[in-house]
Length: 354
Image (cartoon, rainbow, N blue to C red; front, top):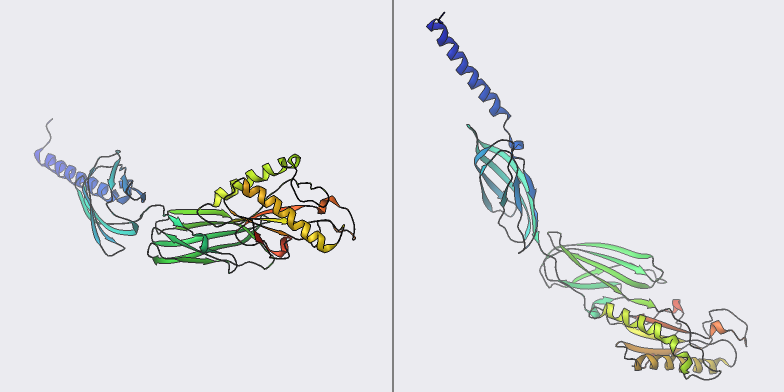
């Protein structure tokens, strides 16, 4: 039986109304979350740029971002159309710097238009700075290091390690927009009885990119002691082999600091308590010089200094006139400053051998 016309008309109206209601409900559910947005905000300058990555679960058309950047610039980002369940990447064109973008998003999803979605993200564009520390810039006496950066400075971190392997101090110092090339000084705290053996420095630019320098400043070179004949200071051929391993170690450590620090080799000589103290002092000086001259002839590039300490610093305490082989020894030290008295060097009468 055919449906009465007036009833069909009523059902059509209800159907249209229901369709509009469903569309209204659907539009209420469309939000910025449907964009599936991820921000790849960090990028190395000249090699990459920040990106907005969209992976929407519904389709969008004519999407546009009108942004206020933290440096006061207004930036428009045209996204265009987005297909549902498909990824789209949009490059953000900007130079070096750290920026916050506060954006109003406008566009359309289906029949639903919007112009009031809010979005905020951060970008960081930079590159690792070049860091320069000159030999004269490491001031161990006043406990400070000066450096220069090829980028705007943001922060410098400095670790100071003692000759016992323990941390002496850890410093983090903020800088605020210092232009490239500006001398930047970082100080540390150190007790009088502590000896800095190495430092590690990291310099950051505003985007978080950094570069660093590590350098030794005090190295006690392990070795087997050369045995001299009684009352003599010439190195016998049979004893030269004992100098080859420390020689290689010295050369390797000098290479590590080349172009960063001015490091020198210090040779200290010691005797036991047999004989007169004055004679022992002179004997230890001559033996230290013999070892220093051997290293100089091998072509070590650093300055070489020597000094004798006689029986003033005994490794093994003994009474006078005691023959103790462990006290007839030498020390080989690489350092940027003359070795301190606290490490067995009570005098600073160093003589240059090379």
